[in-house]
Image (cartoon, rainbow, N blue to C red):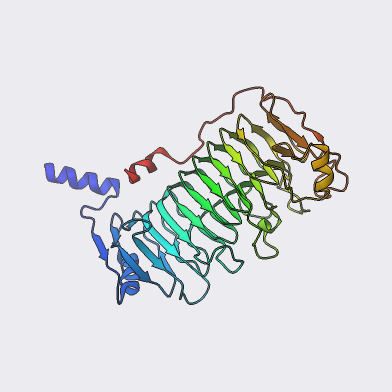
Length: 395
């Protein structure tokens, strides 16, 4: 009777009675053995990558639910894609409840790790690096979950992406924390997504540190309910190396935190230092658009208490010399284009372009010190962040 009860419980939970561990060692045939394990794994299985250097010449893929891929540390297990054929991602995940942890990818020809439609995915202590440094020929995204519900990225590190190091797009229920984004165009980007928490990260030496965007023409729009808190956003001064035509090719060198066309965003508790264009920038979508579903304005963005060091002292914008002279040699740390709605804590230093209309450029700007109200109520944090059950996988 007891055995039947246990069996029935296992069947009801969808958990396999016996999960297998597939151990892969570096060396001859490792790529084939790894891809075979990714194909043949059953739900509940773990694929263990032993420490060492793996030469990978083709993209890898996983389409089995509830699988863990575990290495021996982001500096211990390295999947090297330098000789990869084609231009696809290093690893593509299209299944749910996957955990990726403790390994690295180097020099993928396309994106590093892309997960598409993969709900409740965890990236834990994963590294993606392009070892040649900033280069337009590098892959666009390092860590790239898209169209997902439930995303936890913790302890990751990405360097050298020609678009965004850590990018979460068209997703819901997101946490990005304890991670390092360095020498990318955009360090961390949350795009067309809701209920995202970005906290305790380091964004440094990127063109722009942390970007919160909403763009037209995508299947999922209406980004918002985002908290950017307690991050170190410092020295984001790398020249923009995105390929021409890319939306982030317009990000100005020296941008710390940028909010564009999102709603209900809270920026608080961050340390911002040596971001020479703007420590914090809040703007409308800058281009024209035809998508009738789209709202191009930032709405109900709240800039709370942050710590500001040197910044705004070398702005990459028109009439920079006149602006610097008008503001005493450095621009105030919060820049708003004057469109949409912005709230700040009392005494927050800032300035506004006072643009009269979206998508018409800055020729009609009338710069002045920032004058906006304080928030009338506490920011609603309900439902923001990854589902709590994802925490258990990284214990």
